Image 1 (cartoon, rainbow, N blue to C red):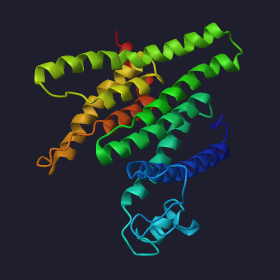
Image 2: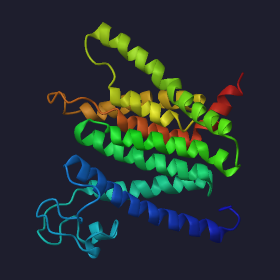
Image 3: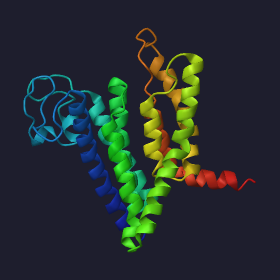
Image 4: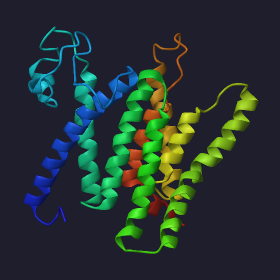
Length: 271
């Protein structure tokens, strides 16, 4: 649909990018409040240094940060460039998903999943944790989107249960073997080999894709994890802080969204 005319394509990209920028700002706020023990639903946005309530001119995605040169308008404190980067990255991810999936229910599902993964990435980077709340939200979303075709087509309860069963089976396709492997490695190494949050994350993500795509995601996650670990541990070896694997899994999932089925089709076509 969006490729019918250049005008529709440009309009769709512009609107999607704007929504992505706004969502990036919201997700930044959500993660900061969750990490710092503030209510996600109550209270207005404020400077993290002077606690001054921010006005509309302070909250325009990208524009406010650039116009204020990365500083609070009230106290002059430095505002992390991460806020700007997350807003831009969210917009890029949103646009890439809409371009890849068009204006479909599947696109909405991928946007929802991407939003959760952005939150998980930020929290894992901040304190090396993957909150169960985000996992639960992703699982509930997966069940809703899996049921969407059955509801739209007015199918039977059996079709609905089969859709949910299929989503759960796909979620277990990678997470269950990883769980068993981690138990074995924990005994062999006498320490935690893979965080429980990472396994739960693989389960949640797996509910949105086929088992083939999930296997592809696992492989890409390992490759990206090795690359990210080199960057992460540079200068951090003395801290003893655990490497956050969540960002690598999230990035691999984005890759799977965009090219996973095509690469799998290419690979299986070789045989």
